[in-house]
Image 1 (cartoon, rainbow, N blue to C red):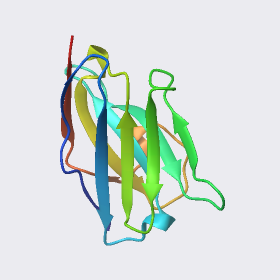
Image 2 (image 1 turned 180 degrees about the vertical axis):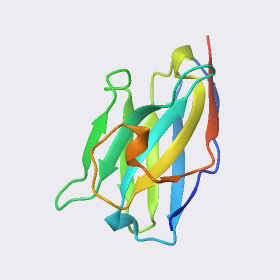
Image 3 (image 1 turned 60 degrees about the horizontal axis):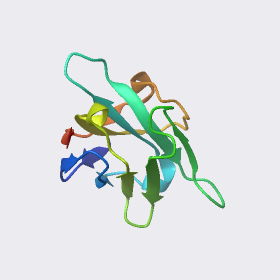
Image 4 (image 1 turned 135 degrees about the vertical axis):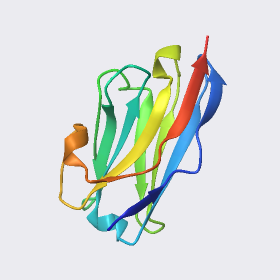
Length: 126
């Protein structure tokens, strides 16, 4: 069982930045594939970024809508995963979820992840 806790999101104006964090417990983060997802009102949950540790540098992948603006990073020594979000736009407003899989995956599909955080609200105003 993997427990995921996301301390909090926030509100910013368009063009601003936020950093989300997620703490994984009851499992070794170096053996997890991690993902960030988001769900806006009346929309399906969508993958934003995914990463897993590997020798050298972690593998990461992003949804086209956030490439060049968002960065996922892992700190396996602290069992943490982060999402740095820059150049935020109102369309980025959503509840953001941290997710984990104990099997290696590069998928941005929510169905590939069995463990989920409680979600945190990110609001971007124009």
